[in-house]
Image (cartoon, helix red, strand yellow):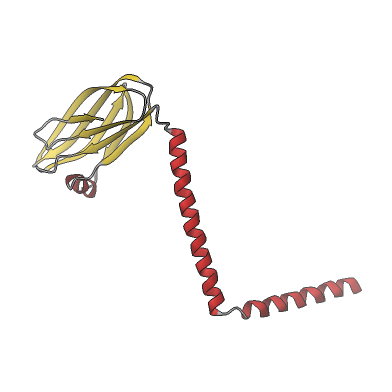
Amino acid sequence: MNKIKTVITVLLLTSISLTSWSANLTREQIKGLDEQVQDIKKDVLAISAELQLLEEKLLYPSTSQVSLFVSIAKEGNYSPDAVQIKIDGKKVAYHIYSFKEVDALRRGGVQRIYTGNIQGGSHKLDVSVMGKKGGSKTQRKISYTLNKGVGPKLVEIDLGSGDSAIKIVDQ
């Protein structure tokens, strides 16, 4: 029984001392702790970004990496509604565009629509685009032979201005 009373007394004294210790924290100490937490958050975000880059390098090694980008001509009033891309008959990307995305593309923006791995050699790239020119709907398709060598492959798909055909810029 004495042991139980002793343990309860020690616990009460400990809780009282912890309560008084936390009450003695000054604003400067709390501010210092907040700054430390913010620094830790920045470090975690930086580490996360580095891990994401490393993951991308592991998932898409440069020897087999292919990246497809979409752009449209600045002039004209062509608005893409949707793009579908196939490589060797397999659908790899499909995107429906919002008004803001079309506006960004018109102002010179470029969208990375696909990054993946393919083996070296020739591959068939099929691009299908649905959109609007003025008030009329348009649908265009193009097939292109993509030659993948050693190293990363970058391909720009220029959707044109509505009157012009889709252009493939192979880099």
